[in-house]
Image 1 (cartoon, rainbow, N blue to C red):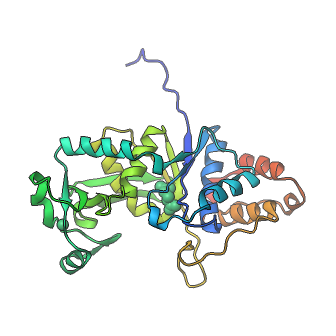
Image 2: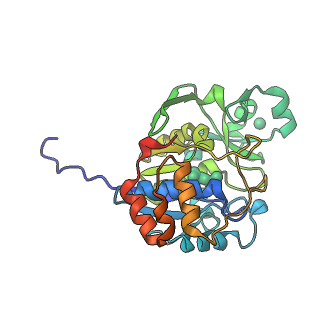
Image 3: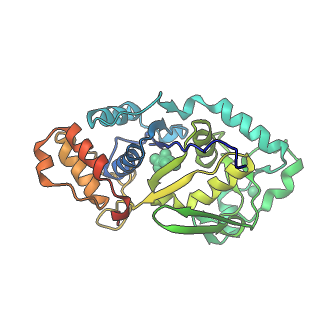
Amino acid sequence: MANNPPFVTNYRGRFAPSPTGPLHFGTLVAAVGSYLEAKSHDGEWLVRIENLDTPREISGASSEILRTLESLEMEWDHDVVYQSERNSVYQTTLAILDEYGVIYPCTCTRREIADSSITGVSGPVYPGTCRSNLLNKKQIGALRIITDNSLVKFKDALRGQISQRLESETGDFVLRRADGIYAYQLAVVVDDAEQGITHVVRGADLLDSTPRQIYLQKLLGYPTIKYMHLPVVVNNQGKKLSKQNLATPLDISNPVAQLIATVSFLGQEPPTELLKNSISSFWEWAVKNWCPEKIP
Ligand code: GLU
Ligand code: ZN
């Protein structure tokens, strides 16, 4: 061991918006937080468009999101990856999990699941009703992965130690929906690994999904990623801003003001003089003074 060359750490982060509408303040927080973490580590920052849920995709939203990033002078590294072009990779991964004997078709209806479940961290805990389908591959329906009750643990950079027991807190979760669409949990794990992502910075609404992602990473032999979950922007009814509750699109007629509002939300204290300066001088200040310890 002692003769090994020193381990060189690289930082590769990413921003992974879903094109269900134009960028709003909530998603900009994730974009800016992940960008500043990456840049302050001298790392790379990649962009991936998570457009698997085609029924919810708004046409033109992807290019609008990318244009907004460009107008904020947030340059990404490498080519943008579109999940819609990667079905064969997800399919191959499902075939591997099938070899391991850990996925099964679930033919339960929403109603049946609701009736037979308790509510967990993100909706009903699937009680494993269809596990006996394991050998009956001809069944059609959603594909679920078998979970167990070992403790999945990770240390979030802002929130400290987080742990979950998947079987009792989420139940066996869906990797491919009954309509054939690959689930976010599967795609995000496959893509983060394949893109060599080392650090994920995103909204705390995804904190509860992280143990499922770590569980999949372990099963697939992928490296475990480091996570930082940022505070979520809420509207005045205390609801997370989302395209669904019609968060107003960003006003980027004054990009520096918008960026200042974003880093201020993240607890940073930009001097007001920055308002008079260019976007690039904003970024210069922001990267140099980025202090995650100040995030509320
Ligand atoms: N596409 C997800 C969203 O927009 C984010 C996924 C992630 O950062 O892991 O909510
Ligand atoms: Zn079922």
